[in-house]
Image 1 (spheres, helix red, strand yellow):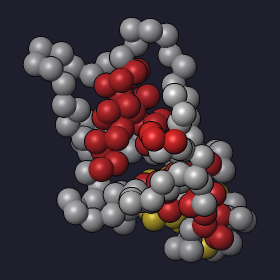
Image 2 (cartoon, rainbow, N blue to C red):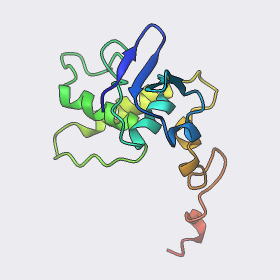
Image 3 (cartoon, helix red, strand yellow):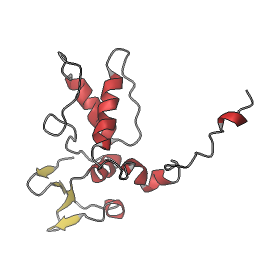
Length: 153
């Protein structure tokens, strides 16, 4: 699906009607009945991606420094994998061995953690209504995980 990026106002504009998206992104604004605008935030882009909308890349050379060992530079497929990891709440990276999946995943995690000030809430991905009842919060334990002493091994 085609989209337009309004960088000065930090908006992503799509043709058509938002439909069900208004339930998950209350900031959506209708534009003359033929388009709708969505603020460009990670949470909004993740919802759009969940509903199969094309979205602009989140991690690129202008928005992230890609920390890596001196003498190396990030490869294009690593940037794609890191961006995919940020935009898709549930994903599998089934790339072959040796494709540097670990560093791409670490970049995605680092990027998400840098979106919040230290000491503030950093579990933005767990705020989605579909995930809130499944993932334990800080200080909580998942019900399906037994404590080490109760494993009987």
